[in-house]
Amino acid sequence: MKRILGILLALCFLMSVTVAAAGAEPWQKEGKKDKDKKDKDERDKRDKDKRDKDERDKRDKDKRDKDERDKRDKDKKDKDERDKRDKDKRDKDERDKRDKDKKDKDKKDEDKKEGRELPYTPRSGTEHFGHWKLDVTKE
Image (cartoon, rainbow, N blue to C red; front, top):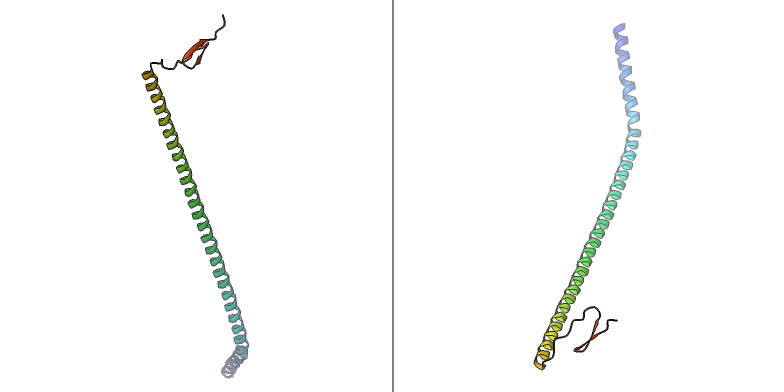
């Protein structure tokens, strides 16, 4: 009798498990499909958001790089222009100085040829008028 009860109990257990599994399977499958679809949609959305963010970051980085290059190029161009202006000014100053020195030398040579004295360098109390000197100190 115990043996028959054990077999019946085992048979009832197997039948209840089989019915429960068979009855629950379609509902779980639909839920699983919905859940899989929902998970896939979320993954797709995350992936799209990540791609969009990566594209924005790349555009921003490219823009920053371009701005930096433009600024570097502009600074270099400005520096080159300043250097050119400074060089031109130095060259002009040197030419002017050479011209002035040449004129002074020519004037000295002319004064020597005409027999005039070299220009007088005034000291304190004297004034220089042409090739004459005038003492303006008070007595």
